[in-house]
Length: 134
Ligand SMILES: [Zn+2]
Image (cartoon, rainbow, N blue to C red; front, side, top):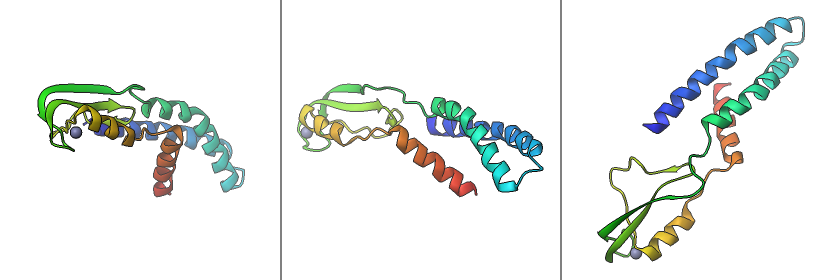
């Protein structure tokens, strides 16, 4: 649900760039189309970098844990106190229908496998969307 909300926000943001592109392209209409488009995208990039940074911001830099008593570890199947990371950066299992709890040892191992998205990952994601649009 959170992803759909973010996706909707992103689509609205995408439309906000339309008037900027239209105005700049109109003002530069006597210019070569490619050059005018590069300039328009540069202006759009200078503005929307900050908007995109807000939309794709990390929610938490530290992991948000959920701890439950008397559960079976998803990995080693020992019955004990169970831990799971609910949110951490872009890792979000807050709406997980079948949450996986792990013993302390296995949860530490699992924690090391969670990769938080870096700024570079977000740019790659953003450019792949742009590429798809072209
Ligand atoms: Zn375990």
